Image (cartoon, rainbow, N blue to C red; front, side, top):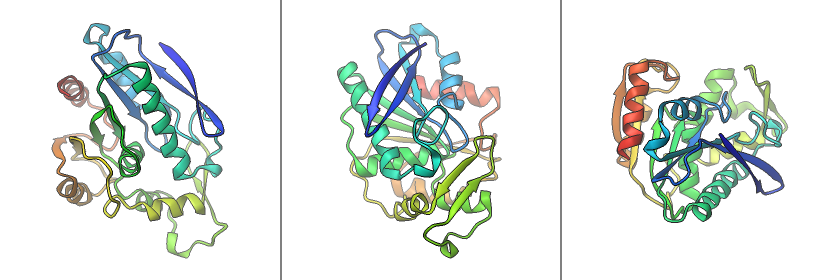
Length: 243
């Protein structure tokens, strides 16, 4: 495994990747809210895609996660999206004309879609979304049992997970102001939407409505919010190879 250090704004990020030298395609994995760069996408695909497939798989700790230099309380959506942009730009410089794909789960799916609402990425050829948190703010309200509308400007939300994150009202405002159903997308790329039939976190109707809005190609798995079945992972590998 190889890691490179990049600068994004006022902090550094570590981009880690498998050992593919001359890739035919690049897959940038974006982890969920309770994950890090080793989240489902990177760790699973790195293990399941042999070097001879020539698919470069990479990931990084999003702001407030893993080894990120940004404390969770200081997260803003601008910081989060700038990281994606800086990584995408690095990959474009380092691997000229090699197609880039986002593989994004849950909160990572939300980040990926906000990124293409705010920016155009020349090398981005498609996105694979797995149980994306289309309504991220509502997901947080459900998980942490709070009502955004009743919060004060100085409110802090504690995320009850092993990551011990604290989110500011300012970040929640960012989520509120960047509703994926109302933003204008600056670029349109093919989107594969994987929906877990047993997902009890993301309402299926939200995903269907989002698919209709963005013209996603949907595929349904007999799996939960976090993909666990080996059959599901075998199919995801096929999807990545088919990109």
